[in-house]
Image (cartoon, rainbow, N blue to C red):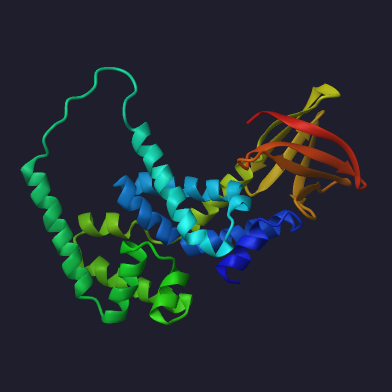
Length: 284
C-alpha cells in the first residue's frame, strides 16, 4: 500500500482494530527515520529525540481522522515532531527557583562542534553518489524512505539498502562520538513496537457504567494484549469487527469512544450485537 492507502485503513472506523493498528505500524516503520532526523535537529540529543518522535506518532494515531489529505501524512508528522520537541525543550526549563544567568559559550566547545560538523560533512561527501544522495534526503532533509526512493527514481526498498550501506561506511569512517548521535536515527523494530505498545496503553484505564457505579471495569495491557477485569472476572480482549475489541470467552464487544482530540473517553458495550450500555472513563 502507498501512504494514502495506509492512512485510510488506519483511520477507518469500519476496519477491524488489528488491521488499523497494523496499517499504522507500517507507517511508523516507513517514517521513523524521517521523524528521528527531524527530532535530532529539534531536540539535540538522541534519547530526547526518540521520546519526542514516539510521542508524535502517538499523537498522529489519536488525531489521524483530522488529517484532511492522506498523502500529506509525512509533512503533517514533521510538524507534530517539531511540536513535541518544543514541548520537550520547555519541560527542560525549570519552572521554580532562580532564573539561571546566561553563560557565554565556551569557545573550545564551539570549535569542537565545528570540527565535528566538518568531519561529518567530509565523510558524507566521500560516500558513493547514490548513497550520499540517499543519506542527505533521509538524515538531513527528513524524507521517508518512500519519498527518498521516489526522488531518486528507485523503490523504497532500494533506498533503504542505500541508506544501510551508507551507514556502514559512515560507522567505519567516523569516530564513535560523532557516529553514535548521527546514526541514532536508524529505523528499528523496537521503535515501532514501543509505538504499538503506546497504542494499546491509551485504552488502559478504569471505566464505569452509570447504572453500576460499584462495578468498575479495569482495562490493562499485558504484553501485546488488552485484559478486562470486572466483578472478579478476567477476560482477554481480541480484535473484533469495526472499531471494536471482543472478549475471547463470551460474546461481548466494546467499541471505544473518543473526543475531538482523539482521546479515549469511554466505550459502548455490546452482547449478541445488542447495545447494553455506555461506560465512561474515570481514570487513566
